[in-house]
Image 1 (cartoon, one colour):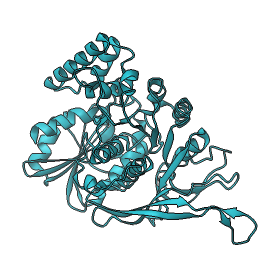
Image 2 (tube, one colour):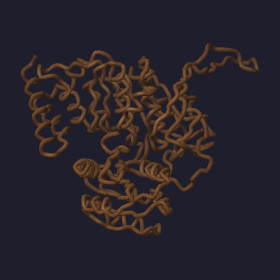
Image 3 (cartoon, helix red, strand yellow):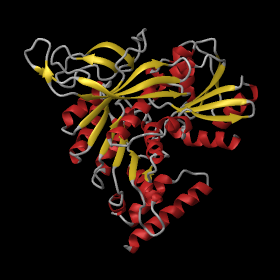
Image 4 (cartoon, one colour):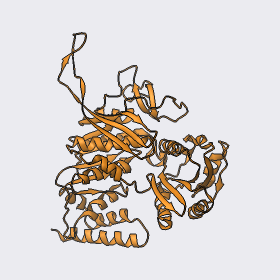
Length: 466
């Protein structure tokens, strides 16, 4: 054991503890310190993972999907490394391994399941080559940081080429993600939702990737689930949504989320009906019934992704239903608090697609409710907040919305956005003051929607009041 590695691990653990005592998250700082002391520590520790390494990428749903996958792996009796906090750049990934290491400098882990920022994959993959990548979706996100989606796709393609044996578990309903997996050269497995769930299509929603990445023709859709996710095909070159390997069927959202996950396998080749060529038929191989008290249609994708990844790797998932029942979303992903006589739900909303799904989840609750919307424009958020104008805030003009409070650094911009859809809002710049006021005079049902840098501080406020 190199003394350099020991010093790096001990220093990182001490740094993390000190940050927590000071009320700071400190994970990224701990990873940065460890790499400074021992630049090779991530590579060495990752080699001590006994079985497989998963990574979870994509614009929305990374943290929930990764934490679900981690819980599923642990339910199999396995030890693992996981960055539960969502610190997903190089320093955060390093911290996950370093803080999981023992004081003797070694890692005791069967698996690793690591959320990684899409743009950071090319910085992380030189240190280890994952066995599996879960790709949730690709939406427009923080234009001033990422640029257009093509830049993100090119970075992910480069990362996939760095790990050519890595299997990609991809959302087949997203034309951008599916195209990337198909063109990467990597083996891939698909998941998605084949049935049409929503009969009324909202044509006003912003949809990315409307043009075929293969030939440039405008894609045609039989239906959308939300944003650009749905049943698509290119009328020119034949690019189309793939037949998925893991499908969600019989979806019922009347009381929580109820559906079946069906895994399909390809049968041996057989003669087609016209007798002119052979075809592979897909047959159902297994079915898992899912019944959970979650809000949000997008959570069906999160559950599908975690299940698909675990089953693809060969895990039996005998306890998956119990995992879902016990799963407590953390870090502001539909996280629940009870303060006084008020039920509070905290949720991250950082781009148009994610915010629109947040709105859908809020509106599923038919009870009277108060809203607090917190918008910051720090570097990690992206200083360009023009994306707010692509969110369907007009849907908040409903009788069940008792009040809307805008807060955070860009509260004036958020108030202006609400004014343009003729919805009144109260401006309280200080988040803690806003929360205390709504708990004191609200209806007892409060939703707090925050973007990225507001998340940790707002969660601390709620936890301290809890």
